[in-house]
Amino acid sequence: MSSQITCVGWVKRGVAKETPDKVELSQEELQRIITEAKQELGEQAAADEEEDDEGIAADANDVAPDVDGAPDDENEEGKEEEDELAEYGLDKYDEEDTVTANLGDSLAGLTVFSCNEEDPYITLKDTDQYEREDFQIKPNDNLILAGRAEKDCCNLEISIYNSEEDSLYVHHGILLPAYPLCIEWLNFDPNPGEGSTVANYAAVGNMTPQIDVWDLDVVDCLEPAFSLGSKKASKKKKKSKKGAAAAEPVEGHTDAVLDLSWNKLVRNVLASGSADDTVILWDLSQGKPATTLRRHTDKVQTLAFHPFEAQTLISGSYDKTVVLYDCRSPDDSYRTWRFSGQVERVVWNHFSPCNFLASTEDGFVYCLDARSDKPVFTLRAHDQEVSGLDLSSQIKGCLVTSSADKHVKIWDILGNKPNLVHSRDMKMGVLFCASCSPDQPFVYAFGGQKDGLRVWDISDVAAGTADTKLSLFLISFDSGH
Image 1 (tube, one colour):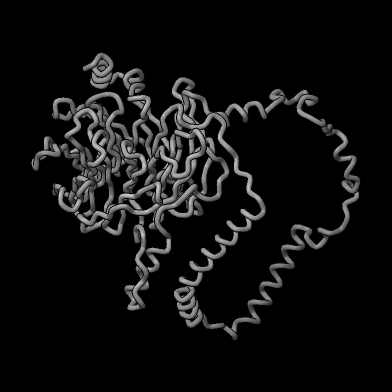
Image 2: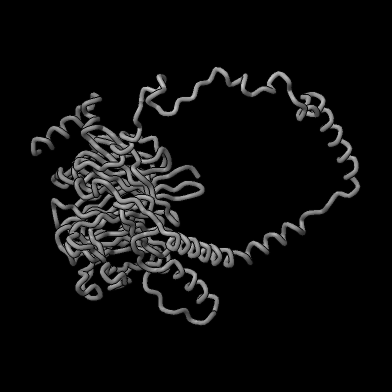
């Protein structure tokens, strides 16, 4: 598997600490982390031991030694080795070469300088200054959070994007325990320090039932600031299916966490959707579930809190439905819509608070009014699943979609009459996610099957091409449409 960006998110300007802290672990803390890692690896090895033993036994039965042919093979191999030694002189390899015996003669022309300032061939004398500047986060920098999955490891990459300097680089990374599926930035610290009012955390959902919350203002951290749920939940669930003694009740999910949504109005609430078919509302101040919603019959793929109504939440599922909840009484106050395919993404229209958008696996995008059963409009946006769906943070009617068909499309949906403005093959393979910058209305981040994180300012397209339709579209937005 090549490197993939599976999920992306943004951090607003001015939130991150100017100079992030660096972790300095004591010997006791380091030993504790090593011990916990060994215990976890031991549990995984024990769980897989039976399957491995069965596979080895099967392979051993298939192997039969060829006793009769063994002597001939050994004689042939011996002859080949002798020929190679003679051809390349390998039999005299260890004998001393008198020509280069004196190592000092061969290095006589090399000069060693004690520092960069004395070496005339080094023009960049002080590299520490440039490293310090790159490490520092400026007030006009955005952070971009990206879940990167590679063959041997998974990381949460924190990149710096500065539109004024046209720069994008990875600031630091965090090693993740499992394949990342979703990222949500949140501004809530369950244990705030004195005078602390702003937090800079990222909640990451992965293939385990546990949600890890990382402090983005700390570099080189080896463990999350805190976690929600437990990785052992799925193991307990499997044991109970085999007829073993009933497992203890688990606080949290029992399968992979597929999406997260933080409540910006009630800051201690985080919603999570899981492959266990449930939605959980977490109380971050307690680190425990406050409510579990069970209105779906299949995996909960996506969910989103309303931007202006703290009690309102929508969730989309593999069961081809979207459910709207009033979280004050979710068992009694909810509404359901059914679609043509599995629901991939949902997003509220912050310019029309009663409307939300939903995308499906069969390439459709639906706009719905929360007060009505019928869709406001239905759009055949792509040929395959619409994996990315986001409205511009500041420009009304500007919608961007990304898809497994490898294309990103820009839409004008003003007046509830969607028109395609521009389409581009991103050359990133299958696209997994799309997210608009909170500070720049035309800047989007994308993640896909290859080529890593991609940031695209869609306003640059009109300036660099003869696309008259896109030019008029962007000009009309800048002038208020």
